[in-house]
Amino acid sequence: MACLCYNKFVGLKFTIMNKHIKVFSGSQIFVNRLSQLLNEIEVPYLVKDNKEAGRVAGFGTLGNSIDVFIYESDLEKAQDTIDSFKEEIAEEK
Image (cartoon, rainbow, N blue to C red):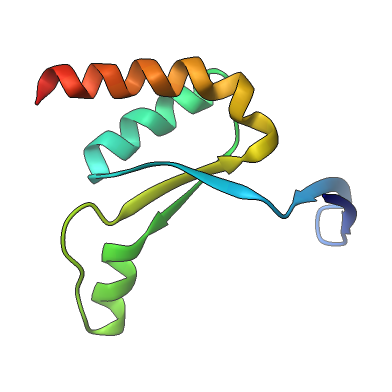
């Protein structure tokens, strides 16, 4: 479900999607690579850095604490790119 909103600071209309889906969780290096690939196909994404948020708050997290989210409506457009990326990093391990 989407709602059309008006940003008074920029004066542009934009759509807010209330449904993001997590497509990847990993290290900063891998997240940067996936972000670059999503930019190339013009898919907006959201990066949630739990490790940095924990550090700032005074506690830490372990493991792959950086998540990448995209709009559910963009999944079909991004699926091939995400699958290729996951194959690429699987070969490196």
